[in-house]
Image (cartoon, rainbow, N blue to C red):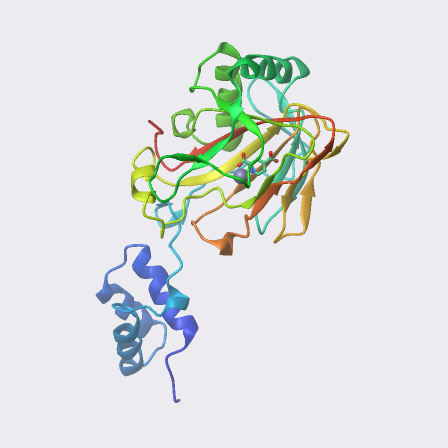
Length: 285
Ligand code: PD2
Ligand code: ZN
């Protein structure tokens, strides 16, 4: 049989290299699965040192025992509700690629009000992380105003953070502080990715505080009468901002192939308040 080096084989080599397998182990594994030794060697030579651009998408950010490990909900038994410790949370809808889960009743009306009222006096025009420097900057794509809470800053915040940690099976310490955003009519957050672009010069500085972002939870604290949905253009999905509900999504690598491009559509009527929790690979300091 005449074998040749295929793109799939090269992709497989890149994935195994990224997962920490040695060159020798990858070679042995190819031969054991039926590749002719000469072809396997050629595939290694052309791929190991110099992966073609098509093969260089970043590897998953976290692996434990060779398995991707990400913040996620356990939906394996199709539960209608999930026990988040101090509250039963409704599962309203879920999607697999991208992984998006819409949750109901994550926050009580009192919790929504408390977050809004403690954020209100601190609001400032929202900044985004400046990927060139690792600092922060005004961004015309983001016309909301907002503020950050430190982790555990108030008893309310601490309680919500514990709930999120249990729901998403991810340590509290790996979460950034809650961010509260306020959108008035016309305000929006244009589509973006929440992970930090590995090609930007400021990213290594940003990653020192806990590694990559792996997942996002946007919690809706108010209900604009029109507009203000959270959109996922690559999935053709728009999540309505319903008070107390939330949308969760995760991304196993900092790459558009995760299809997690998302944005906050312009508010047309009413006010939109959200609280966002981003989850990192390691403890966020
Ligand atoms: O407010 C939103 O719907 C929204 C949309 C996209 C929030 C975020 N991203 C975010 O906080 O990252
Ligand atoms: Zn976002």
